[in-house]
Each structure stands twice: as C-alpha cells, then as structure tokens.
Length: 174
Image (cartoon, rainbow, N blue to C red; front, side):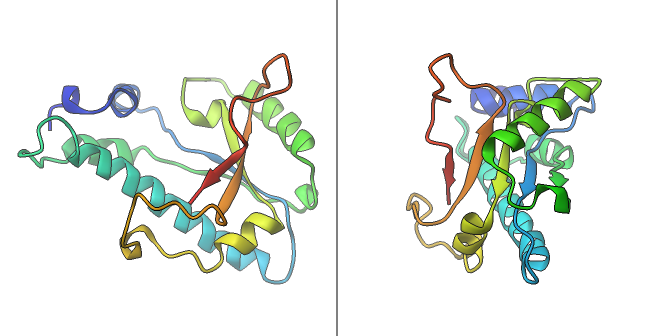
C-alpha cells in the first residue's frame, strides 16, 4: 500500500515510525486486588488487539481498496509499544495524581515526539477493570461500529484547557 493512501493520522504515524520511533499508550493500573494483576495483563492484551484492529482496518479502508498490500501497517505495528505503569504506589491514585506522574514522566523522556504516549495516558482503575473483564476481542464483534458505552478505559490528557475541560469526556469506549 502506498503510504499516501492512508488516512492523515495513520500516514503521520507511518512517517514518524520510519526513523525507528515507537508509538503507543502509557497505561496505568490503579487497582491492586488479588485478581487485578492477571486481569490487567489480559486487558492490556485486549486493548492492544483493538488498537491493532483499528490500525489494520484503516489500512484496508484507504483510497485504494483493491490493493491490499499491508506493508505500511506491518511497519507501523512493528513500532508499537505500550508503556505499562504497574506499581502498587498507584493503588487508588486519583486522576490528578496520575496526570502529575504522567507529566513528570513525559518531561523525563529525551525524545518527546507527537505520539499519543506523550499527550495522554490510559488509566485502568477498578471500574474500568470490571467493565473490560469479559469484553470480546475485536474479531468476535459482529458489528464494529457498535460501541458499548459500558466498557471503557479512562483517558487522561497531559494538559487541560484553561477552563479545566480536556476537550473530551475522559473515556475511551470499547
């Protein structure tokens, strides 16, 4: 597939990963129960499967749908890395304290590109964990346009607007 046939965000991602840059999300766990450690790893795998499905769906729905060469998608996916913040010090942490930690983490990174991993993070708290425990993988969803608002992760932007609004509702539905 010609990278110019990709949507703008995917084309931009392809360009930035060509030089070896990685991309992905920073994911925090803020609940520590006997079940949460195992469940968290399963949920990270689930989130990654939806991210991959979304990427490949974008590649095959490009302008040239007769050419299914997925080389660009393979190149982009090879650079995907979720960064996991899984430490008991985050147990019960508030969104504000996660944002503060995330901001300090971003500032400590040598290279701060335009990747989502430097602009927002995901939080898996007890509520999110419970909503995602039995979520089906993308290949088992019969209607990909159907969003179940009861399943979600919390998304924390690095910066709030001046009025305290982050520009979206802070949830990434599944």
